Length: 256
Ligand SMILES: Nc1ncnc2c1ncn2[C@@H]1O[C@H](COP(=O)(O)OP(=O)(O)OP(=O)(O)O)[C@@H](O)[C@H]1O
Image (tube, rainbow, N blue to C red; front, side):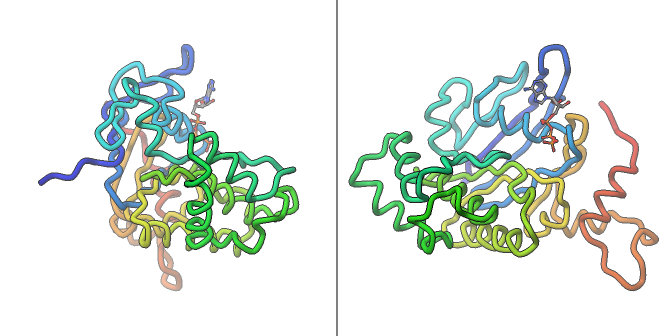
């Protein structure tokens, strides 16, 4: 039996007012997969995420989440999705626990459901030690982890993150990626993560390259590196996705 994709976007075109922004973009996120949405600034990553969230509608094409059409059944589709946007969506004056309880209330969860769910989140994410601290007192990395817990409070099947490691130091980045990997493996969460920090995408099962509103390439990180011409890598160092990205950016656009 063929499995239903967690996210299926087909031939999406979209303009912000008169500015064409996405051109016949197609993307598939499979159950339990981590997909990296890569591309330069302004490539259209955030716009595509806004369309998946149903915040704006495509001029052409359609998007399904677990087989549910985002435009026709936006609320049902959104129940399966958890979002971590570029800026942290937490109240700095409330404690971590209060923020999570508040987010759960917004999701329509009952008192009886909320405490066990927060306990589960504390098992999956390293946030227990500061559960009673105000969010404003946390480090950038800690805030991000709480923001992920907030996005997962209603137990969605998919986590979508837009540039989650911006402004984090290397150790906080490392902890964030290892947490994402363990959420994927232990909780069978599907993850779509937008980033322009290529080397971070090494942990993704597949990467898709979005430039100037077009998907130019999709494949595994290993396949990406296999594309590199030999001379682009020195003898002393293995090629990374950053090398691939720089090489890809040097290639001319192929428009249909
Ligand atoms: N709300 C908006 N109104 C008008 N234009 C917008 C809006 N949001 C994005 N755009 C434009 O759409 C294009 C794609 O932007 P988008 O933010 O989707 O790219 P991105 O790949 O996420 O870039 P970044 O890495 O900088 O976040 C840009 O030209 C941007 O100016």
